[in-house]
Amino acid sequence: MKGIRTPLVFLVAVFSAAAPLLGLDSASSAKREEVLGLASKLLAPRANPAAQLPVDLINPFDPTSQVYPNSGDGKTKHPSGLSDRGILQKVADEIKPSGMMVLSGRPLLIFREKKYEVGESIKRNLEGVDYVLVITAIDATSFRLRFNQEEITRPIKPAMTP
Image (cartoon, rainbow, N blue to C red):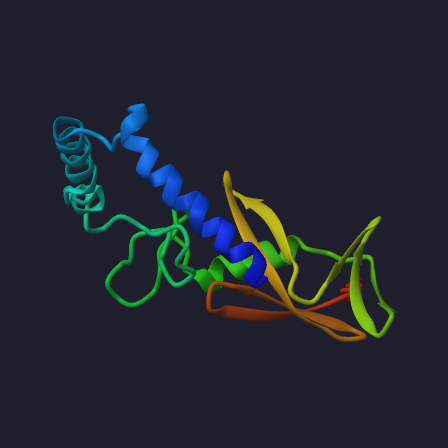
């Protein structure tokens, strides 16, 4: 390693001494000023475009944000005029699974050919608005659904009424 170091230092010294003779001079002061001016222009602070957005704009990545305006009584109102609980009850009445099974120790809710497990979401339409319900639990005879902060339990096979 020491044998390589001496010739390498010699070559660097020769090239650095020969560079000005060959016209490989560093950039002139005018060129340097031009580059520095461009750099300062690019790095100058700019106005934040987010400051111009409305204050009441809903963040789509915030799960706690409300999609619909609040009525003031602490309950979210939706286009249908129902609260979260009312929407959950109406939509959950339309969800009728054909059965339940356990696969690899995981309970699955069966809707014809589709299988849903705990944590998956079911999308349903009510009065022209799509609502997403999350399956929170699956038992042998019932399952739980959640919409926003409301939960409801439904039987897998509803009882037949005469």
